[in-house]
Image 1 (cartoon, rainbow, N blue to C red):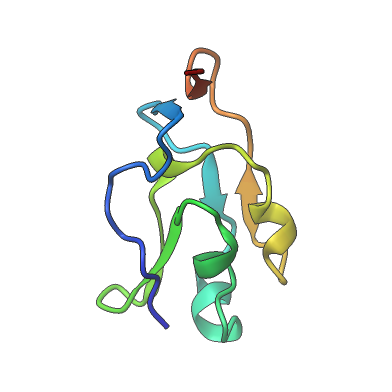
Image 2: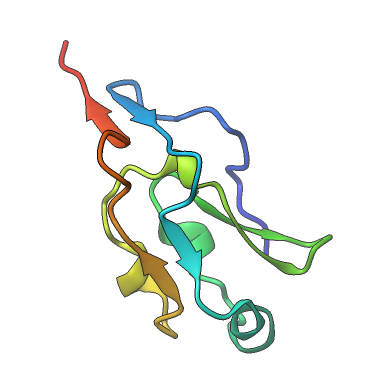
Length: 98
């Protein structure tokens, strides 16, 4: 299964994301994703395509710089395998109007 969004560009016009140098999203057990999660829902329920399956590495990859902090990822994972936190102060989503 392949995610259709793998680019680094942010697909939302009114959002700017100031990414920290460290991810605020983690997979607790990579082995669980590859061995027990057949459908990999994280690769399609995230509205900005933060997660994608890398066939070469045989694991879930995270592009945390795309995260709009909707908070869906921990709840959408059927195995509770995603650890998501708000980014460190000064980083994350910056909304602009107009």
